[in-house]
Length: 187
Ligand code: GRF
Image (tube, rainbow, N blue to C red):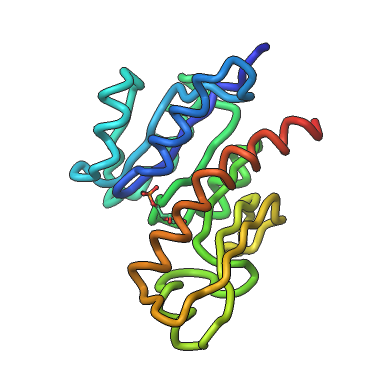
């Protein structure tokens, strides 16, 4: 099968990147990860790009035209699909208008609940009985694009931010690949 050239954007640990790299080795998985973009030279997740010989670019987001640089790099690598996996910068309206291909993001809550940061503490504060993760298309509204997949679990009485994070991320590792398969099944 002809796979799409994909780029994963990260800022930190990169466990979703690691998982997507593993899944994309499957012959039938619709994307190949050709590039990693990262805004943090100390991000632990960069090791997965290195270990798998995937080109990675560290972007200095303190310069004003950094998004233009990203667009040029994406063109150079013929990237037609972007996965945001713990990328902590918000893509500007201009970026989204320039890059007209598919961009998806994974978020650690059941959207539309708890957009933005500090999701786990908000979940505890609001005494939720269930939570999970959501994979969605990226548009101009923060965590507001069309939802592709959600996965849910019920909270236990002893849960804290750390245990919720572990349980949420365990679900992310099946939700993200499933969402990608779903997108290409529809096309
Ligand atoms: C994930 O939990 C994701 O939902 C959120 O950022 C986290 C990234 O984790 N957007 P990792 O860097 O993939 O380990």
